Image (tube, rainbow, N blue to C red; front, side, top):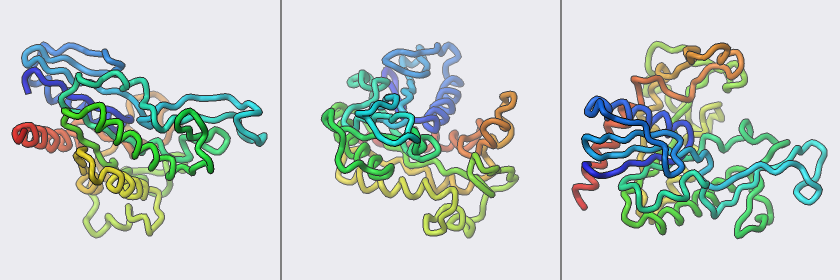
Amino acid sequence: MKGKNVGFVGDSLNENFVVSFLCVLRVADLGAKKWKRKGAWRGAYFPRFNVTVGYHRAVLLAKYEWHPKQSEVTEGEEVKGVHRVDVDIPAKEWADIAGFYDVLVFNTGHWWGYDKFPKEKPLAFYEGGKPIVPAPDMMDGLQIVLKNMAAYIEKEFPKTLKFWRLQSPRHFHGGDWNQNGSCLFNEPLKKSELDLWFDPSNNGVNKEARLINRLIINTLQGTDIELLDLTHLSEFRADAHPATWLGKKDAVSVWGQDCMHWCLPGVPDTWVNILWQLIRYKLGRR
């Protein structure tokens, strides 16, 4: 990997991933320096190996921006405005990275919900600069973005080793994050418990990972983007989230327990072990 660069593009679960990656690599190079270029949210340069690792925060992957309510934008007194999503344009945070990274890890999905974009501040989907008619719902919009971003990635990064990380499972018990959901567990789940927690047919609060995975898998078929499936192994670890131990004053009272992100050291370190084995194998084959 000397002289090669690794990039992560996506939401805070990919940031959770990259923080683990940076901590692991720093063991091998105590001279590591912070790095924030090319639109990166965070990253590091490892001079001993001439390796750069960067994270580009792009929660929907596609470009989106807030538009306050205007008569020509939307109707209805309850709507305060819309988040315009240009499904065929990448977010500016990663639009300028072509040719820099040798390995890229993409993800999206955790922001595609009505808790992030409620009916008074909905997503409005545009393609070619014009509204998509009829207007897609949330999941249809996600599917359109996935298709367009996959095509863009294949076109702009033809020589890059590309991974798409499938969803990181949540472990809210007794309600969602804003409904007093909790994850104060001391042991992993048993295999017999997984479908009860995650199978969409049970309509539980944690079903979103498997639902979105289906869309991602179907969309990426026939592309040269590798699936990085870390979902199933992570489903067992209901005991591995920050829960009430967020380290920020009043965070639990404001945001509830964090049963989505992962403690470090923890599950993302296993993700890193799997990723680097795949990188070594895939680059070796090249």
